[in-house]
Image 1 (cartoon, rainbow, N blue to C red):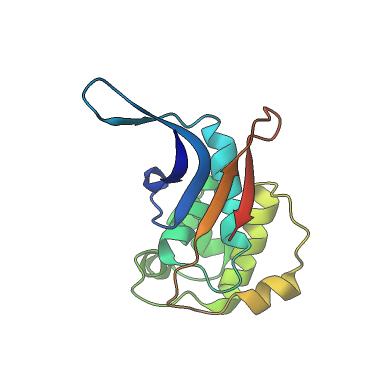
Image 2 (cartoon, rainbow, N blue to C red):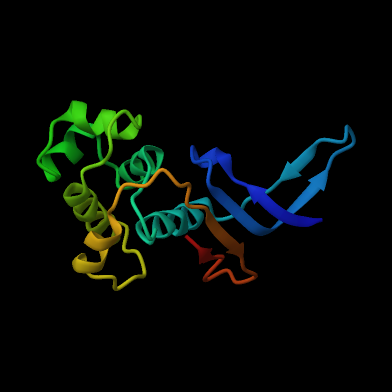
Amino acid sequence: MNKAHHYTESGLLNVYIEGIAVETDEDGEEIVTIPAINELHRIIALGIVSHAQGIAGEELRFLRTEMGLTQAELAVLVHRDKQTIGRWERNEIEIDSSAEALLRRFAIEKLDLPTDTGIDELSRRSVPTAKEQPIKIQKMNDDARPYELVAA
């Protein structure tokens, strides 16, 4: 049976994957098999940097870890201190819009994300919001491109 899978395993609460096979074992428990996790996480990162408004702290943490950076390393790149990065990630304070635009650009380049969105547009999108922005992904039947971003 195929239905939207709420993919919380990423540490994000706003990721949904369509087209994932959900099976039931002998005990009635659902079993979800998610192939190509690295490619899935790359598409999630694309969804985050494509948001029409500001990103959430959890999304910042996701991008940072996908880029293989520590809080201290990211702090150097965006000219802030490590404590500020931690506060952003915990949603204690809003992410600075200028730093967010730069972070989105870093993620696009470092993760080789398939987008040609310029820094001017990324800057316009980097506006704090309290509204959750769902990331909807479609599982494809294509080994070369196993996932496609539907909405972010």
